[in-house]
Amino acid sequence: MSDPSTRSHRPTRPLRVHTVLYDGVEEQDFAGHIEVFGIVGEEFLAQSFVTADGARRVTTSAGMEVVCRDAWAPHSADVIIVPGGGYGDGSGLQREIRRGILPRALAAARRDGLVLGAVCSGTMLLSAAGLTRGRRCTTHHIAQEDLRAQGARVVGGRVVDDGDLVTCGGVTSGIDLGIWLIERFFGPDRALFAEEVLEYQRRGIVNSA
Image 1: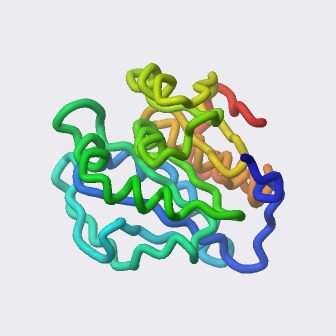
Image 2: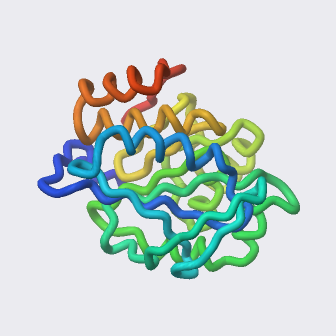
Image 3: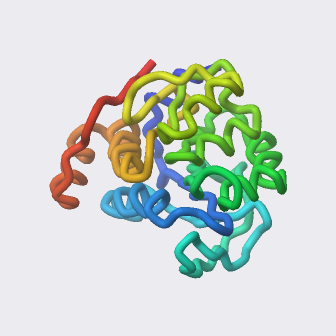
């Protein structure tokens, strides 16, 4: 169920956002919202790279190495965002689903006050964790039928906000997700400022409950 209190949250400390990385993750799927959140400033928002395996080095789909120094600690996060890692056999995403460690960790992380988000095919990892069944959400268009078949209520919108579950479509929509979350937590003025800094205009719609 959606938790309406998460929609109006105004933190008295920096909002803690954990972005989950794994081998084969797509660079643009996590770069978009991370760049957006960096505009807010450390006074308002603290970002961490995490993996379900703890601190380690992750190799992205293009061979970039990213060091994740922080421990897996969902109890200390306000927002956890799962980026995509391609789709289909051989993709980083499919390897993570088959390995099972990350889906189990995500399922165990769910609690009141935590917002779970996903970019592109990352929604399928939330689905593998059983977190999208009966929920309004979206993913990259090539995975939408599979997401629907797994019990999700796939709806239109570049970003879909279902309270404590916020998902977005393919690749560059991660920028829109980041700007929407800034608007949701910090107000429209800061969201507009982020757009101006990035010289970016949001596309499509936000489908909000």
